[in-house]
Image (cartoon, rainbow, N blue to C red; front, side, top):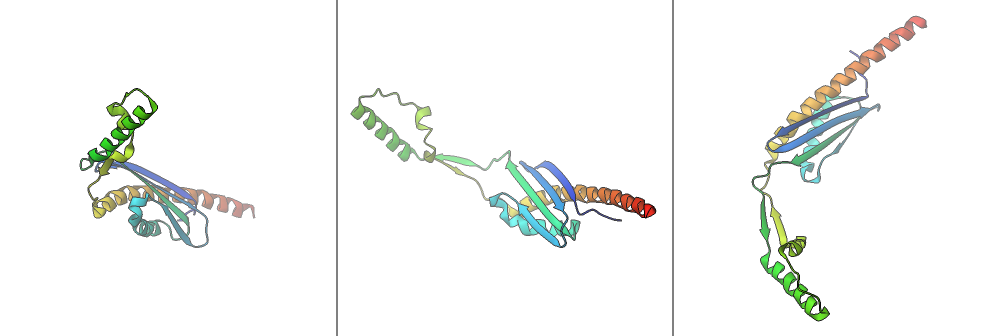
Length: 166
């Protein structure tokens, strides 16, 4: 069966507290050329995605885009640097005294200083993330290949139609 080099496939799923979206795109190219757009923290997925892309297309310029959004993160902890917050409060009060301003400090004012908070995430299991991403990527690849087959069928009909004219 003839397959077009142009194709698109997309899949999205919620797995393990993560919303994972994978898109495959390709355009005509003489050789296989691969590029990936993945979040920086998941750069280790690129080589594995390239292998998956090579099973879906042997030629063409193939681009895979991955978006991973953590929806539920039970192992995330937020810590407050109380000493730093105290320093901010003392500095603001000193500034208020020197400038003759009213002391209207509240918790919401102090909490705007983002550097007093530290967000700690537990290390993620790379193998589990790959298993989740690959499950979604395989569905996107199937849709990608199906679109290329459909487009290839249309190209075949067009070529056969032109052949009868010739």
